[in-house]
Image 1: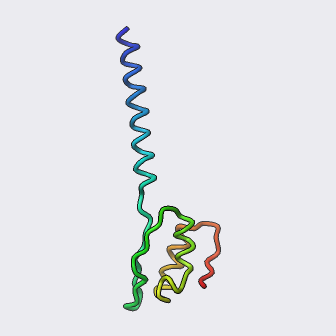
Image 2: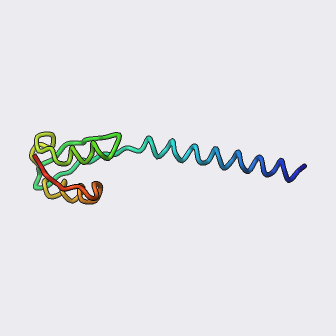
Image 3: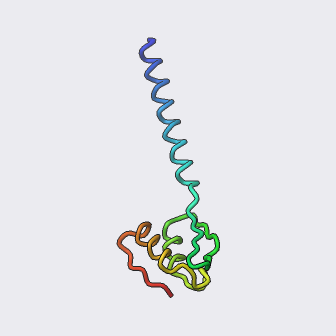
Length: 86
């Protein structure tokens, strides 16, 4: 009986631990604030990687700043996509 109770408690603890991990991962802040040659993009935050990848290519949003740094971030965080600033 004690073994069953210990197994149940361990199972519940494992499930709760998994829930906490998924909650913290989904609330992760995806953002950047880049400056190159004293020209800042400003801080931009996103809820998903797709929005991040789109914003990194948006020259207007980024005040036409930090193109090289934006491309480096894009290549790191947007694998398989082509950097096409506009």
